[in-house]
Length: 185
Image (tube, rainbow, N blue to C red; front, side, top):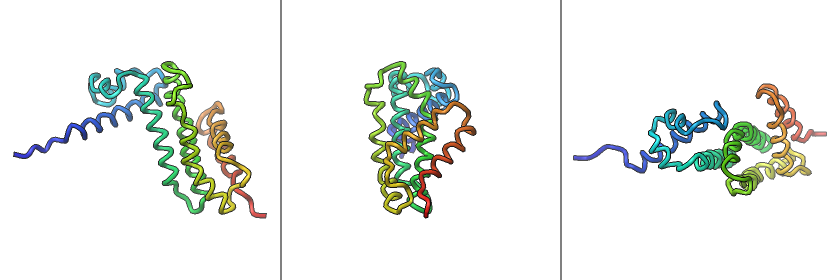
């Protein structure tokens, strides 16, 4: 007789994914104060499963941050658009989404570690992921060649830090990204 139950590895991976999704939602909705018990409940797993995957709050927050960085870096390779400049802009919008949504996770991590921890060293990965997009847009003479990706990411981060609602910040981001594009003279 053949057993058709999923393997333990598949089940474990599914549980880990469910925990991370529930944690992402909990930290986005409730800020850094979301409890581990609430995350276990929202993910549909028991506390033992949660703690087997993430032995403490810091481990869960670090995994969330790493997952989000992985997603943003992967998005650079898949960025869509009609031109190199459009693909860069698409990825910068995804980066903006990351910056505005990671705040509760980072605040929670700061309670459990210091900023010298390697988990906070995401800038280099972002630069490596986005550099080919910027180079292609500059080679196509669509983005000013005097700008580097550090400057552009700093601009996006600065806009993300402006107090106010997403609806308030969005037109500012749109104007800044439009300003990156070279104008034909």
